[in-house]
Length: 349
Image (cartoon, rainbow, N blue to C red; front, side):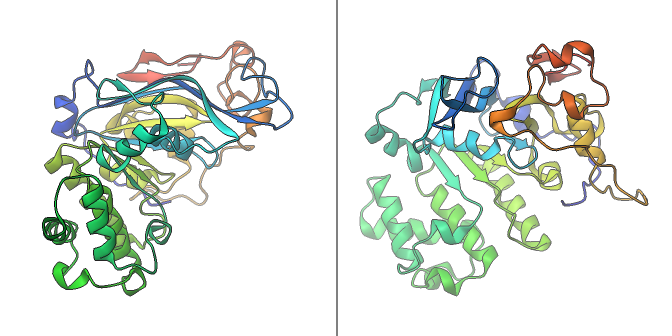
């Protein structure tokens, strides 16, 4: 993980203040995602018979122009949350509970034909590996122009002009000349910039970035982070960034949602997550990564491992690994409650 930089108290961006909690851009209301045919229902009441619960009543909100980071260990449900929002769950996965609203409109019940219009036009997606998002046998220009025309009424000439503008906006040198280039002719960082341009082609309200910097070196990571922050600030788009790297989150997010075993355990402003984490899991995550200016012989570790979705314990899923557990933690699941300036799901806080 990237070392977490120091963030001064009060360094929240203006976008948080402007985002109205009464009218969020994106709202997840207790969504549940299950995996069918795994030979068990997981914990009691977690899903239908024969199904395993992957996401368990996840609730989140994102304001206009806000950057919300979603963090946690591998298997916490971060990427599954993004896939549920954009409607890319393939059987045997299914959204079996809750609601997803985009700018007040429920989108989880839309027919697939209508949902295809939402993707790209209203929601842009940036995946971890740009090579999986780009067609290797088509030029960058062709892919951008076709995407722009699909989500607007621009003719081919206007779409080409807009493609040049987008490439310039994301920092591609000589953008008009690069329209004829193929994906393999770009570096990894430049390919990710092209993917961001594609995500912006339909002028979306919401951008979901799933591990957008994982395969990049540190200097390129910083450039991509700055680019995403610029997109949120200039275009007023909300950004949902999914990552395991708290260093990335520290640089870009206004608020952070911490996930564990398919549940949200804490949501708070970034400065609180970095300096005053409330949930024992969040504190353990923060303690297990290097911090600039602090010398240690060894880094603290979180004992044990995250439970498999089919073997999650009753009560708080983190309690077997938690040094602060109480007797009720093994029997009762804590719900998110307003505590310490954010929301925390913990009996011990």
